Image (cartoon, rainbow, N blue to C red; front, side, top):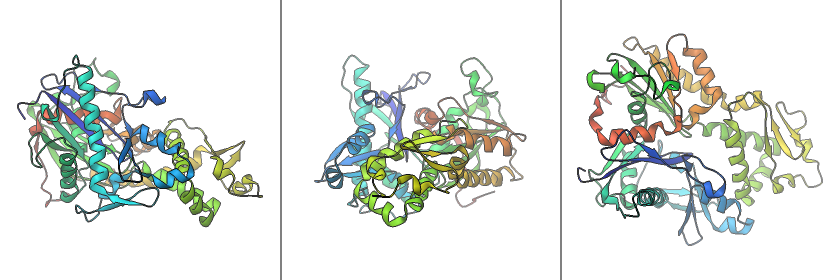
Length: 436
């Protein structure tokens, strides 16, 4: 580990993935990259999706996988294996090396291959980025300390599976190499947030009053991902070290919940036989529509959204007018070639997820031994204004609720710092203690 020149932290998410990196001794200069610019995107993370051909050979990852897939013809799409949201396959599942997961075309593939090829792509991208910014000098995996983030609420088998996938991907050559560090996602986010200003993250770079400089301060980090919500509570100790006050908790109540509600709603509207046939025959088209929904659902403004209706979905009714499916349906209607969803209806897709997150936080906040000064919202789902609003309404009078700028990169940035000093979390609650 001491020989490595760089630290690269990979945030492998349910919906989106990315990485941050720095030269080992330049922790004040943590860098990230932008993905998909050549395809008209440009975000610090790329969709966690991967495409294999009919011979199970890796083709594309991220935006490239998504765009290649949605441009395939109906017949080609049936041959190619497209995977998304597969990280959730490790949550509360019996995990073995032979675990199989199913692609959009119904074809199973070994989970270890799907995960390791995804990590290989992220690793190669990171090494190439470093090469491009170091006069073309070539670096290899062993020049890097790799930090891979995992949900704290995962069991030991799932975490070990990720270590094996990372080894197969070539991040390290040995399973137990000390150049591969697994960091718990909410802990990594906490390490990043503790060195941000305590009066609000808009003051980043201006204020000198950081959380880590106030021993005794207690704060909760709510890591809101696409699949899982991870919650941890830390107290700042002298020297900026952290003491865990509450065993990490959470569950499968992330941002993807709203996507599932929307799909379920469409299935009810179009009747399940018709909808299921459409999903089977036009998986790439459905993927494009869901990406459209995913982008618009978190715009943050209290307004209606419009989802373009894909060609083959518009042809489903045959002789029947498509608009007739939307008659007498509250909050959703046919509008000139698009499906219009009112803001109130959109909120209903989030209601279950947000309600569960609020009740999880409430249970921790009401623990007598804990007196939380701050609730810090991080992760991609944290940018959802409806989620922020509900948490502020519920807890805003009791403590400060803050969401850092670039909340979706807090885990990756913190994981770089954690990779430099894995002992930064000085004490943890025993798994046997559970909730104190």
